[in-house]
Image 1 (cartoon, one colour):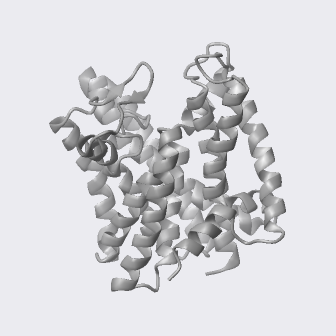
Image 2 (spheres, helix red, strand yellow):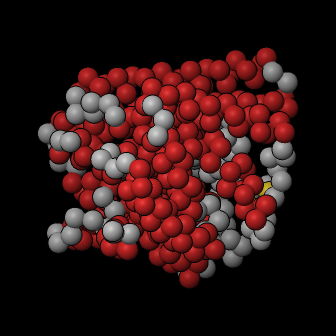
Image 3 (cartoon, one colour):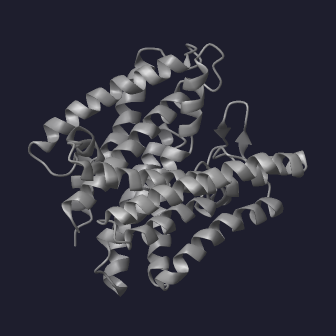
Length: 349
């Protein structure tokens, strides 16, 4: 593993977190469509929705593959169990504050990664495709809208095992079916010779082609399919997670990873961002507990106040700046972020 390869993945993680920061601040501030915002800004923020998180999960799969590359059998499952329990605990607490939390899903994603670890690597792309294509079959069998109140984008309380299972596996914010496909794809990507510039260029090209194919199929399908199938099969937003959303989000994630790997080869210093990329778990929790907590304390969250898209991006930019300063200062003494260090300490053998 070369230093450039690790640095490239850290840069991609930073990009993923910055995208999620904007998306989650948008959710917290209750801003969907803002007629007063510039069209380009609305389009840019819309493009981040679901795609920043997808990049995050693909990178989690790559990190999982890297961390467990020398583990087998009981040692592998011991590592996965400890990390999954930590993420389930932290994510469960965060879920009480921020319903779109992704960390509690990671606990299940990691278990999925352990199961896939025992399958021949040649099967992993097929497993990825299987997860993507299995979701529409589930949606034809079960009610995807169950538990949702779409006007307020809220989900019913997770007060029973059945509701929690449905939310986790099928129709929550980042359900294992089909979002587990992103993790399995990341597992597969980590096995490529990422230190080679040719590989990075192929990731960029392949990812762009996949994303464009998804957008093209979306446009063609709108004219061919009945309207009731549009969201289920042709939607480009993460709710519901249609096959074309998975294709475009997976393609953009792949392209951005390749771009990050190429960027760090250019001789330019990306340390300001890679410092953040090494502590995305810490910053993810911080942007909810501290960032959104501050917005709430200032009375800026609905229903007390209606915000604009420009205010969403401005708040995210200010928090990103403060996070960058913190990450720089912390990195002067420590390699990992505080929550990452705590997780490693608590889950050590």
